Image (cartoon, rainbow, N blue to C red; front, top):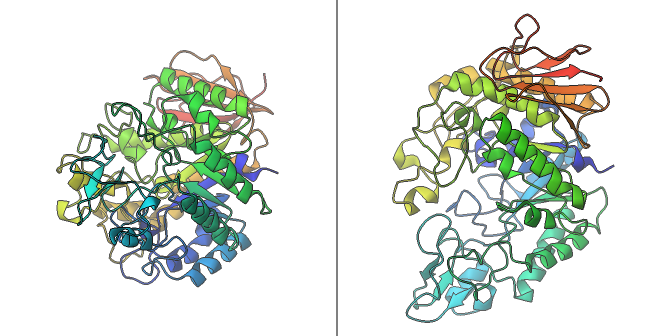
Length: 506
């Protein structure tokens, strides 16, 4: 049945989703309490960002133990109950796996500091590091141990890179996969999926730590593990790659099932650019028979309500545009339209927690509360990713580990649930209609020509999506009825920054 080809998947950032014990930090108890909310929202699966024990040097992506749950979130027994309860509601569970690096508190690295098992990591003896590779969080990618050796960390110094040429590392992660598969998880989101293999012979100016050919053999062995289990367990890869053909290689039938489409996430609110990204995405996925995966926001990027309200509506890690003037009314209107566009495209879609509430980026967090290592590593020039990780509002909230803006009380689940015009009501309608509509999910599309500033396409049987990116009201094509609209129509015509789903036949 290939459920993952058409699924709507909701990303849970556990620290910031739901607090079940009142300590200000999201946990498994809170998530378990909110499972009916997620089932009612209309999603098919949940992806949980790391729930493992971690010193939180990088928001949980510095894993100290891959086979347990962080005490602040709960226990392994609670995780098993969560999986069972989600399944009972028809929700699948995808968890994060972080294979490129671990925490410096991981037992393996603690042994390496004592001089044991250093070949599980990338160590170098000498007065200088072996190259000038830079950390993706800023600064050098090499740090020294107390005995003077250098070790590689493409992220923070608290995240030493694992050496995937070591068979022990390979065996360890295959065992970790089985550990969680045996507990019923339905798949894994692979962090930094392109980064496991390094080539130390290539020029430093190149990217010899990304997208090396040898990584594919690793994922073929992982796929063999996954295919031992019933009920279609899946992989989704995180790769920020510039070449769509190289990207598609990860999606061959014996490797990963899907991967995040970041070109779409980064695309500006522009008709030509959006159409080009959609066309390029479909073209790249077609030869390997994989479904596209569409995403507007996640735990690493500026929330799209904020992006879409700026003069520059694109996203780029190199210029996150913190504190840039933003028209939140405009951003919200465009975010509503983007929801209809995204949910109508062929393939699978991801929703980041709070997206369904229309939450914006919180740019003005007190500096002393910022936890993202990017803040420190950049010398306080990049405000980092904390602003998209502020705990979402439910309406009965206590303290939270990052402060919520006061006006979010009006964006809470409680405030929006009974309002038919709210973002939450829109997402519920869109997700339910998407599930019910035979034309939506996996498949293809055909473009309609309604002018250069209008993005319109049909999907069979009997469906059309029209998005007006112009500055004027436009007429809709002849149709058999409006299924959904992101905002009010004007005498049956489509206002700017508004999208509509139509019953349509040529």
